[in-house]
Length: 335
Image 1 (tube, rainbow, N blue to C red):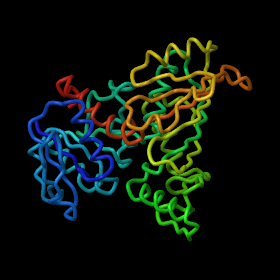
Image 2: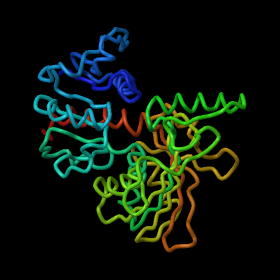
Image 3: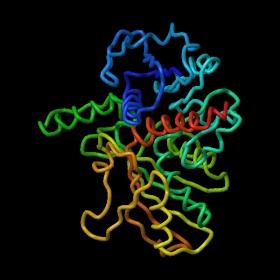
Image 4: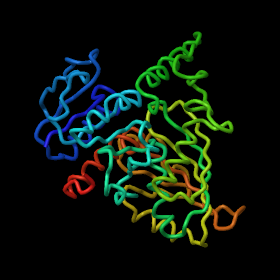
């Protein structure tokens, strides 16, 4: 069984390599693919140098699974070509709402892998991935009616260039020099920007609508969800303030027990200074951390949560590799 990674030189592509190495996923050959600009680059994996090949000329009949980690335009151009020969796991937004493409978080809806039609599986938005991990056990227990989520998203959600820009702007700010923005609509250093992706219907941004639509597709179309997505000056890990309204009453012990048992979740909830998780602690960790668990007294059966997760890992690379693991462990039952 051979594997290919499209976009191997980017943030998510390199993170997929880290996850594959850590998990020791068994495969025969690894092909690293990128644009002609990056072709020839050498990347170290498991103690061996791999040379990056040109995506444009690659023969996908060589591989069984292809990870796409290079953005929507690349997926649009090459994913279906790859899917004629291999099973595609796509990290971009291009296929997420395609009714013939399952949108998967393995701990939440692996049963949707049965009967794959296009030989393509979509990875959700990084903010959605960490959210549904937490919502799933609570929905099973109490049935969710409505979710209000505000995100505090790191700059790595936009790629390497925004990360570099935050570092550069921070230096310029501290040196009292003029700052200009290339990857953001306003200065990001020592600031926050309530705007991610382009504006769409009714004043919402596409990022906010993704969270609504993807949560419905993954978990339950009857859940009502509204989101406000904010970019903050943090390099890695997304945070979310989540308000949930359930159909049933609950105790906080029920909530904590359910979340503590849920795969991929870790409760850190002490009502004292530092008794909660922040982006810094979540970076490099596989779990989604849940803190500040408390009742919302302003609505019947209401709950407030704070969720933090590494967006490059949990929200992208790890989820993609876990999809592959699920397929392998089930003898590609979805194919």
